[in-house]
Image (cartoon, rainbow over all chains, first blue to last red; front, side, top):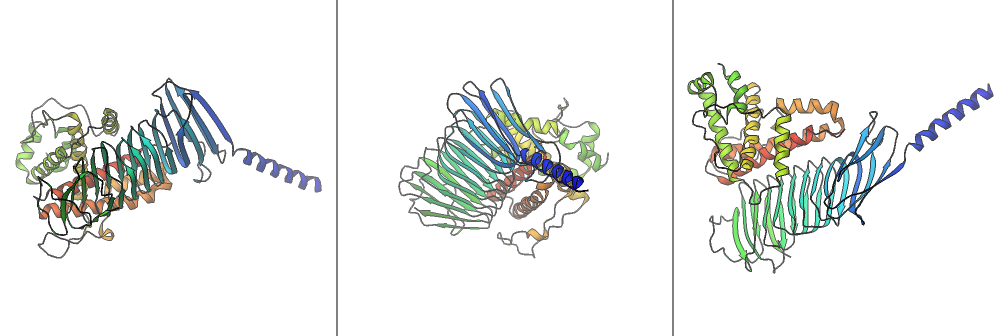
Length: 281
Length: 213
């Protein structure tokens, strides 16, 4: 009887050990040519994207159960990374943590549900779809950046010379020192915060249905700005000069327009019912 | 031809025109004629939102591919124009596709509203421009939304309730903006808000149906 009990205990310990061993780290390395594209599809788990050196794509994946497998492959100059669910499990069981290093000019496509996502110091095109993931992009330059979020917050910091498009239903969008030829942010019910000089002689459009838009810009900003709301309100504490060629009449509390310095960039702020606030940094 | 039959084929004929029966129905039926007029209005407004900087061709190929995979776009029949509906002729293809996506969406929403009237509550009688926002509590999800969420119970159950909440948000935004446009058809900001709200709903549908497996 004692031997049976010991045997059962050993068997249980063995099964537990095997289960624990399923939480493992794998690494994949690929050498790619300039202009490579990398796609990552991972439902649950953080994804970090950062620059590599030497033209390599290096994928470090840490899984937490044997209910998933990490599928990595290279086809030509394209690397695909995908988490495959082998058995249904909880988000924690099907979670994989990715740390992906890519050449700075690589184009990235990333699909995730919960993330979070962190991308830094890259210069290629970036295309991110996320459901509830917190998305942080920093120190990017020159690429096309497109982010679509359902409800996760989106934070962009120090983006230069980029084409930026952010669409979020209810995730707050924060832009800090984001400048480029075209910057477009649209939300349904989430606030938008912009802090910076709207540099680069670009076209900036921040719009929200019911979220508030808060803009803080320095006295050195060179912008033509218009702000309008259908049912919300507009507040301006920045000393703009009147526009030389206004396209609409200012309505107290509902719209205003103005220019600062040489008006190099155009800035368009629109809400349906949210409040628009503009102030000097 | 009944209204249901006409509206079923409307997404496929709206750009290229219908056959003799379809065009006769449009002449005879006020409801369907009003619907086509509304969709033309949406398409006209969509043209105004063509971005200053054209997105990468990859973006539009992706949209076109999604519409084709969903069966929302089929090879156009070589016929004449649907009564009074102007072909988008010289416009760039990108504007046409954006407008088409919005039209198709508008058709589905209208069809659902005909079958199951919305539970959106109307504000008590003020004629002023400023109307109280539609309450989130009174906005429902429509049949298409429900079907989408049903699919998510098997494909993406962990995300279903998040998508349900956000569908309600965009439906409330659409209802708000639609109300404002109806009260002030000349209000360009209200029209723009309506189109943005439809675009957000289209985005939600696309994100809900993408496979992560």
